[in-house]
Length: 290
Length: 270
Image (cartoon, rainbow over all chains, first blue to last red; front, side, top):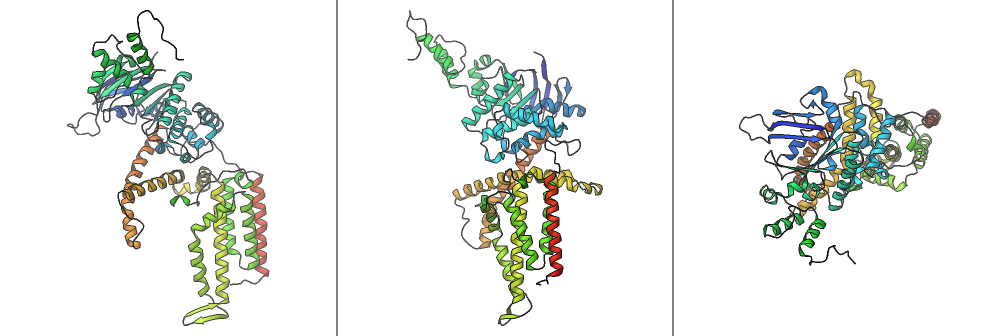
């Protein structure tokens, strides 16, 4: 896999003044094309600030962000960058521009100056990709939060980006809406090969990624597969982050000296590990439920 | 309560009127409005009323929806009607000190009431049958000639689109904030008008703050989707005139001719 976004020695502060603290404090990061990366951190850790650097909404104070080799500071490439890196924000209501679903999805394409016939095709395709095709003539304010967020995602997909950055897309949704959005994201990553950067503080979502990057006070603290990252339960807790319950249980038992794997993700894996530990000698398989 | 407003609401459908070009609808509506006022006697006014009712029927939208939009301006209708009753000339029917009711006044009142009702009805037809984006698109196209005078036509149209989109969002938010303030013991239903207006302040301030936050988010979302003003922008739905628009225009032109002929041959009431 080739590098798609490169972040080099990124420092960023919101105000010019010398003594204000850096919101991003020396971030180095490479994101591969086609990967699914979760960026986690507690509120105010700088994760959203980082997200807004990926499509040049914010520009580094020092350092560089390169998207497919194009520097985000370079005005010439602004629209090329925004075309290939789409950003979905937290509040679905505030990012829908038009009063009809399909017209909102078309908004980005219209801005790019794509001919009407092709826009129609792209919009239909994007709406099918997020399973909202039947709602194309509806007004967004009659839809649920999860549906609205999927419309916002469709609006980005219609622009055919290489990468979608989602800045806490599920923070304002109910559990059902959250599931819908996460499933949509996973589907886009697997079936369309779209690079996904998911900014979240729900660890259950981060577990689904190929790679988890943990950020606190503007610095990258952990970077690896979910298994590697969640093995550091103590460190994550120190940085005010939750760990999936099953993972935490496993880690606590392991600390007490039980012979358990270094890290488990999800309840099923945890149950399996516990079963292995507890199973009476002689029996080999996990009994299937009857 | 705030959600009962039907004015400016779009009701999707497949009628003849729905399928007409939005530009044609706007232009013809303006012409109808002019001719409702041109009609100077009962015969020509009746003609305009019948034509308006015909248009309303053609939209195949429940008449209840039109009545709802009428309800909003019921007060205006009654008020202007009453005022007109007292301001007329001609044969005096009833007199008490300076108050005088005349035949002329009653005619005036009837005329004004019918005019306002028809006016609201045909205007509702436009908003009921045209999607907000078609409407703003049409306005943008119709105002295009003003670009010579450096009027920012596209920006105005965009602002209208966004305003229409956020009306329901802000209404919902107002409801929420009102409930939140009521839960904290705010009293918004009693007292005189001044007290009630004052009681609205704790609703308006949070609403204002949140609108700015929304505007900021929306601007960011629009930037993310490469919005860069009207230059080089295409539209998914292209407006085009069809035989329907021509047919409607011819029909209305005939009606207008009829109104003018009536005005000449039948003496005006006022």
